[in-house]
Length: 452
Ligand SMILES: Cc1cc2nc3c(=O)[nH]c(=O)nc-3n(C[C@H](O)[C@H](O)[C@H](O)COP(=O)(O)OP(=O)(O)OC[C@H]3O[C@@H](n4cnc5c(N)ncnc54)[C@H](O)[C@@H]3O)c2cc1C
Picture 1 (cartoon, helix red, strand yellow):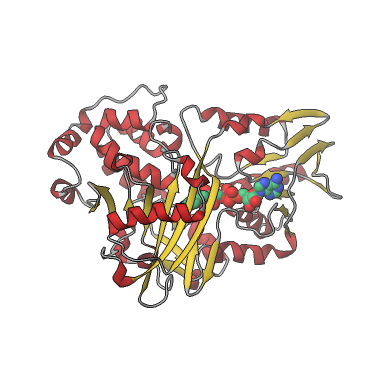
Picture 2 (tube, rainbow, N blue to C red):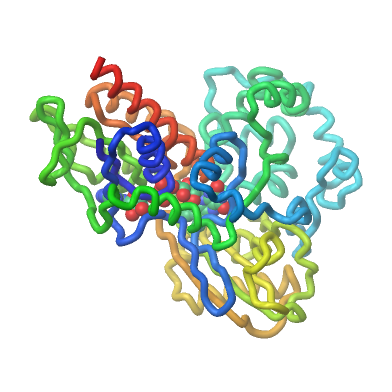
């Protein structure tokens, strides 16, 4: 069994197969595993170049952490992380956390609040119509929610645009709420009972966590468990199936292959099944948003804002340079030396993809301009780390279903080939972990059927 791609998806799949006694070799192009998860520790600061937190919406996450013996090293976000800020008129305004708070909040106008009350009476869209998220939100809850709630939220998760994301593909639960209950508000209330039964947790209530040494703690632990099975520095370009055996241009053959790669790398693979070329170039059509992570340290007294929350998101209509900022040292202890704070900002996305092509000094200055306005930052940073992801996050845009159908069909055509990861099963870390785990179960099941 071969796994190609050593991000969290491939690592989780390899670990699950190991637990089930199925040997797998994992091929990774880079000289380290972890993919976009990359933690840097220097000078008393801990910077995340990629993801920052895991949102525990599935019981499989806790299971993985326990199986790796990492429970003691897990750090949940502080209580204040429940506060989230949205910038309006250049000021961070707390996002209301309760229905009562919502009606008292200055974030939305009276008109927008009244519009929300009409939501249960809006008719559902036809089940076969694929809407963009923006269209869906304008129709159900109005323009102001799109601008000051959904647009910044989408920038925080996808670095993308509500105008192009598909509500059905990118936010399937939202789509299902409307289809099932005819209303998001009613669905939210009635859906709580079902979640309780299935053991899943809503995004608002899910624990958010990292580890004492950042998210790389997880990928390093997986790497250590899989030690002998990992081959780094091996970029796989050709995959060939002949007589039910798979070859990757290496000495050995494999019974099956799991592809846990970004879509733009899948599109480049030369795949041959029983002498027939199978092109994966279709998957090159999946759009990725570029993002630069800008991690900055400051003296506490140089930041006016109390930093009592998860962070602040910037709606596009505010016309700031960056997408938003996470208050990293408020979320987790030990991210900055005593008397200092650490902020992680993101810039670029589909809003302003050209910004990630600037040099690190220019990128930092653009973020500093925003931090001065929004958080009242003075002086110069005491620490900085800029990391550019040219193709960071795949966009589940309207029409994305054709890519998923293509992967399903290819799995049918090329028996023994499997796809998993962020360009198929969702863009969050939890999605990737669940995707890797489910792919491993499917492969284990198939291999068992072949033996019997
Ligand atoms: C800046 C940023 C911030 C994010 N923040 C969060 C967050 O806070 N919370 C959250 O839940 N999610 C977040 N995400 C999303 C989440 O990190 C990803 O969805 C997830 O890590 C994807 O894992 P993966 O294994 O599917 O892909 P990847 O991490 O991309 O791994 C793919 C691996 O395949 C390897 N590879 C590529 N080509 C080949 C080849 N030919 N042969 C062999 N190996 C190859 C690559 O080197 C890489 O290691 C963020 C993502 C980014 C980019």
